Image 1: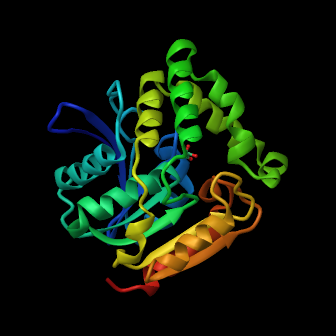
Image 2: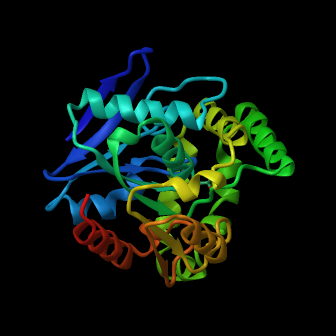
Length: 268
Ligand code: MLT
């Protein structure tokens, strides 16, 4: 069921909640919305309670101008769970920016977290050059809208296999980018530029953790994700063939199988 919840600061989050059982919270990447998880929602809702919000500034949620930090997104998610009456600790599954938010959720709301699933993400902060690029993206999207991102991003997000065999996924993703509010995109870009390095936290992560990466991910590579897995005490690692940065969207069957195996095989 699609719901709309109001946060204490007046912001509103749109969220899709389906199924019953252990709650699994899906946190989308940049500059997308909850629909990137549709294949996971469809496959897992018969065994779990699946919760897929649009983050502040994205999809049908309200926009906050300026900078929205990863801490703010993590706090929004904790407030969302409380408002939905979900008191059981959740499995948080985040992709890329969703992973940056996951580190903050682990730090700030540990009592709400049972397990982590990290897809195509990194722990390191941005380099000075990457921060500069984010600032340029924020200024440009506010000045001219998001079309340039919709044109530029697919080459980095998707594998060659997806370009050849599933061009409809690319078209759908471009449509989401084009319809996302420029102020929301800018605020998240500036928030990502300001994020802290979580690498030193990895050895303290005390929940079972699954890392998933597309073999062809150009943004957060297999080697980078493997090095994260080596630093997290209870980590398992899966690389997915014929997938890039958007592995859950590009290759839902092996991704869903890995998630299901992890959820059913790890007790919390
Ligand atoms: C994402 O998929 O969320 C982005 O690639 C994150 C980023 O730009 O660092």
